[in-house]
Length: 319
Image 1 (cartoon, helix red, strand yellow):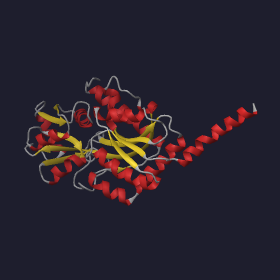
Image 2 (cartoon, rainbow, N blue to C red):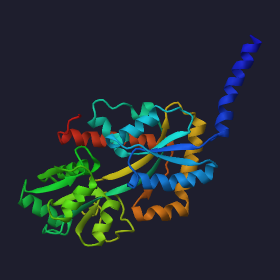
Image 3 (cartoon, helix red, strand yellow):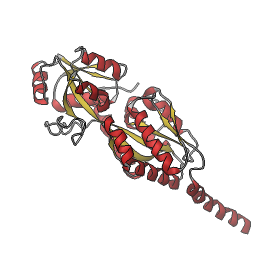
Image 4 (cartoon, helix red, strand yellow):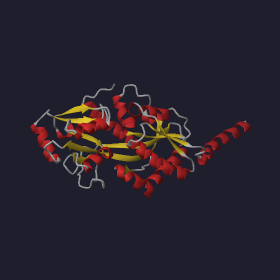
């Protein structure tokens, strides 16, 4: 009995000691999208700073597919020791639950939230041939021509699609959804005046706005951004219920020790506070957050509920 008690005591002490030593090897940071996109850029900048703070390499592993689901699932199934984590998207963590019948993981059961890394506002723009330069003019035009105006998206169930559906519902207008396979063809067609409007991540549209190739209408966030100081928020134009922000959060496998999560959170939060990271991500239009694991978990729940209701009201069925 004395031996068993000693073994049990050692087992209890082993976990904090291991957590205290973390990380003991390079950390794999999965990005569930191809290189070059907003998720990838944010992860590389934050991961590089975390590497400095933790004293171990943070290696980016791009695993695109299924709108971020494949890479996120890889984290859910990884060894829960904190050495495999992800910075993944709103789509993979909150939206897909309402849109995929056979999602291979349950976000809050199979993953441990670490922190909300960044939000990227969705920007509503119209084509240059649309006779509207403000929200007031756009709503008047849409109500004058019900069913004749359309909005592009990056695909059914994507954040741009749901943002458009939220806009349609909140403004009580009849506009037609035109899905594309990604942001690039949607941008090409709005520049070419083939579609009337689109919500997209701010970094995607920023160069087109600066070049005068599209007309900005409003940002789906609560405060103006430095990169487009003259563009109002949806709240400022009378539609505060349209909060549409893509976001990227850090998660680890369920079962990862709390002490390891705490160490990952501290490194991520410190990285997000650094002037170096802020300067690098400012051109991306990213709003850096760094909230606690508990706050991030609550945010995931609220976003899952919010976009699930939008999808249901729009008649978007799981596939």
